[in-house]
Amino acid sequence: MKLIVLISGRGSNLQAIARAFKMKKIKGKISLVISNKKDAHGLEIAKEYGIPSEFHNPSVFKTREEYDIHLVERIKKEKPDLVVLAGYMRILSDYFIESFEGKLINIHPSLTPAFAGLKAPRQAIQYGAKFSGCTVHFVTKELDKGPVIIQAVVPVKPDDTEHTLSDKILQYEHRIYPQAIKWISEGRIKVKGRQVVVEGAEYGTLPVNPALEDF
Image (cartoon, rainbow, N blue to C red; front, side, top):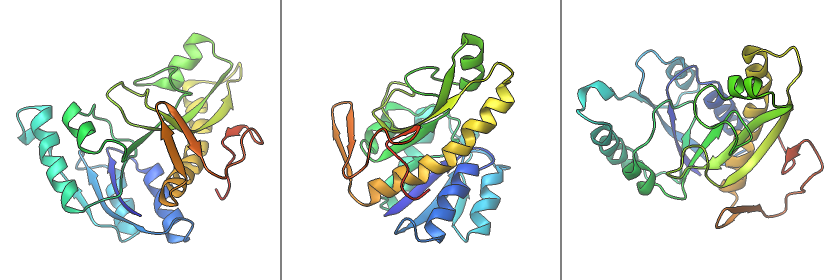
């Protein structure tokens, strides 16, 4: 399994994924980390793990589409098996999504399709939701509404704030993202329309669906 990871910020999910590779829980490697932010802390994390990293500046391109065409050309040179969005804070063009259809995944801090877009934990609290969580999904042209690979459920307590709920969700993000990548690397993911089935996984045994195996 050969990955490209796209980031914009602190890179905590990148770190969780890189750690899983280092500990041999996932076979393969992250071949490149790309950031659209020059000062993204995730670039430092890539350096710590010995992963090549690059900053690609969106401001030198006239349009979002031109930037994405540039990124697609760069990513394809690496011949990745999977492109992973890990806190990448740009809406992707249709061209980018089509270029990596079926090989592009994201993690979102809600139980999708609920609370798509920015500040999902805040949306959950404002809505009065009793449960939230996080979702790893295949990326489609509908924002945060692609086929679900795995979700983790987190209760929303009456005294939760956007910050405390985000922190609780993040702990599960660091578990389910490497798990999803491991399943994909092992060829255990089967997609039929919107239905994603993980071969050999036990469903409903934990407050995570499917159950976490190694993380």
